[in-house]
Length: 318
Image (tube, rainbow, N blue to C red; front, side):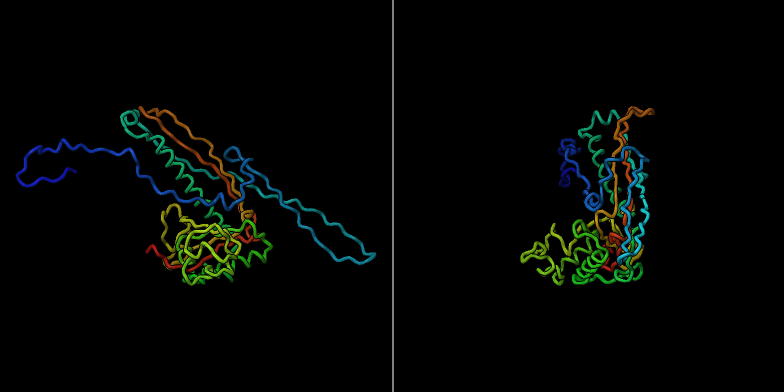
């Protein structure tokens, strides 16, 4: 918009000397951090090649121990071979068109720009899909960790820290190894967790006399044995950053899901099958399209302590 003119000033009245200039620097979307690769077992990804492929995962046999006295008969048990099938049965795609004239006359590389945006959108949907599947297939301990419409309170830092401590105890009782434990929660949960009254300010929790948590910084150090991750894929109440890529209880009470477990408990196999450029048969344009196929399987819904937690935190988005 041209600079305004004083009343009666008629010099260069059409303002044609001030053309509109389009910047070559594009305002991009914020990229949501992806957590799936950090919390899942990807050992089987290399064995997946095409959409619909399956991997048979053999479970370790369970051995029975019996009491023995001298001269007693020893009965050998029959081993049971059990398998879990990981199927690549999920797929998402993007496709957009770049007109030849628009590509030629544009000062931006729309194909590269939009392809980058499409790759991010696929990653975002992947995170939502896997986390939502974990939540749906988790073994929930409603006695210790609440349930939908009966959430435990997480309105103070101490209450959030106590939740993490309870989660650690439940995994300990399930003989889950300490190495590889994780916790995923929405930003509101961690905001409360960092408050001054949280037990995380105590060196007895972090195991350090000078913890990065003391100044409110995000830390890579473990808390109660968990590596902490946050994700906007988990909605708080009925509000999420993107309703098509968030899951959680449909409630305005501020309830949210907090997931925790061990990375061996769920397997994922992600594979970008194809990104290609084809000519549009109906116009002078290129069609750029990308396909993402993947599989996900909760292998240990309870044995590893995968638990979907409902906790009442303030819904800061409303």
